[in-house]
Length: 303
Image (tube, rainbow, N blue to C red; front, side, top):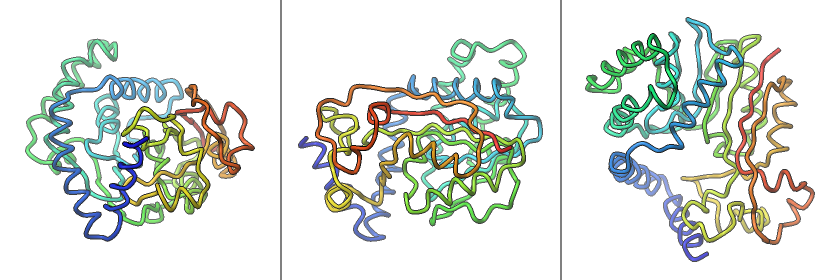
């Protein structure tokens, strides 16, 4: 619990002012890039790449020439780049601040190229196409060159809303471990904007991480330790602006999609033991499935 509290305190300190938030982002970009280059490719990211390709194929979510939107594209545009290796599409990369890391991006895809044939079970035609594009990606000297090559558009909007995009622009909107960071005050409108932005029969695919993100600093606590705290206590002692986490639960996410009039195609969740923590009264109405849900893929279609 000591590491948990220390991490929360440090993140709160970085959240105090615009200046401290800029320091946090600079440190994250500098030290984070070094770490990502050192540790190499993660099996988790390979699995996510495999999964999103599998889902797109299963639900016939992408056609040549489609426009896609990635929410929270992050440091290295992993999922967008993987999709682009196999589909001729235009992808808008959306984020709330610029935290791109070119060295980490190229390092990841250099390693990805070495394992993708086996990990993704590619046929010869798919493999040749992907290897050709990856060679060009790795030869590029800037993100701008990569964007020109892949038909990407990078968009940063600090307020985090999707209002700038026109109605029925995209055939697929997707995100991986991002929606849990969207401010809960704008979440209903955010998911409604998904619906507005999608073309009829368009798809949304979201991987949502429901675990306590401070748990990643201290694995001695419950993976959903935040369920112990009231909204007041959480906001006062643990909530921060640089790694904000909205504490929404599985049933609440599914309700948001229902209220936006989406049709659910598939839900795939993981569940785990959260220990014997005392659940705060705000969460006592939840059933065991909600309490024990750790991650969820939510796949929806706009009628």
